[in-house]
Image 1 (cartoon, helix red, strand yellow):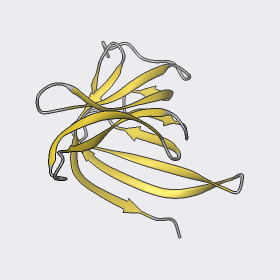
Image 2 (cartoon, rainbow, N blue to C red):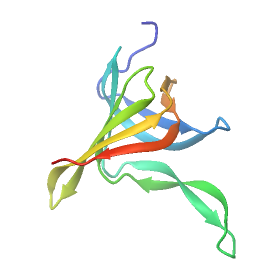
Image 3 (cartoon, rainbow, N blue to C red):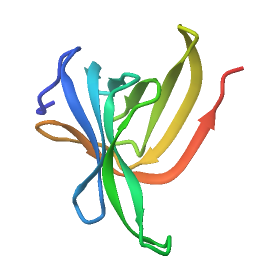
Image 4 (cartoon, helix red, strand yellow):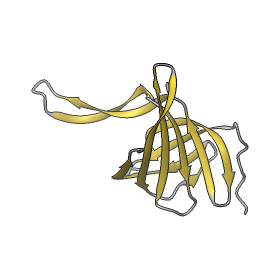
Amino acid sequence: MTEARWQPGDEVVLRYITRQERPGMSWPARVVEDRDDLLALFIPNGAVTKQWRGVRDSMGQPVTRELVDIPWRRDTLRLMYPGEDYSIWLSWRDEDGERVFHGYYINVEEPFRRTPIGVDTNDHTLDVVVQPD
């Protein structure tokens, strides 16, 4: 292994890179674990993320998109596997002050690439949502 490892607690940025090679949606994350076979990142409820928002003209027609600050809605543990084209998200929501498991989210995406500030990938749109029993 020649790549540097992060330590638990390190802060990194998870970014989707567009087809035009520009940063798009982005999340601040805290490293939970970094091993040869797994990178586990935690994104807390309320973290300020960058998300796409459509911009419309005066007739209401979409003309472009812009990145805006959006608070993340739930605690999320994102499990990323080197060389794999998916990640698994486990999320918890706040329900009257109680932390409740919300479900699993399997995100189909490019294998992640390490950068000096975190990891880059790109979403492939297809997702699988699994709700708990």
